[in-house]
Image (cartoon, rainbow, N blue to C red):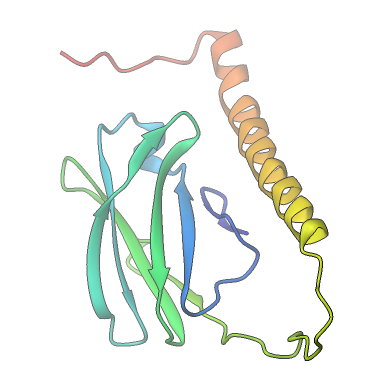
Length: 154
């Protein structure tokens, strides 16, 4: 699920009591920050506030977060220079859905999960491809035109 043009989740919906992986390709990734942490909490009062340092990969910064059973997931990002990406002081706030019990199978017959696993893998690959295409669209014209300058750390 793409939240904004630079934030992605590895799932379509945020569901309570699950682990979600968040990818950040925003301002701090684009300007070459060495480290980024996600500052997050739950609900309107920002309960259970926590900070996690995100891992830097070729596709952006990423972190895994346990979603607890509340109504919303609130977060913002901070880089190593103590600068904040907080959605123009609005923070990033997204609803957390309750666990759906509508699709629970009440049968003694074995259920095959092979199809579901194949769909999940294809969905994850499509996300990776989308991120790669975004990177190509964003950076290839800059590299070709010579306007892309990589920051050199001293």
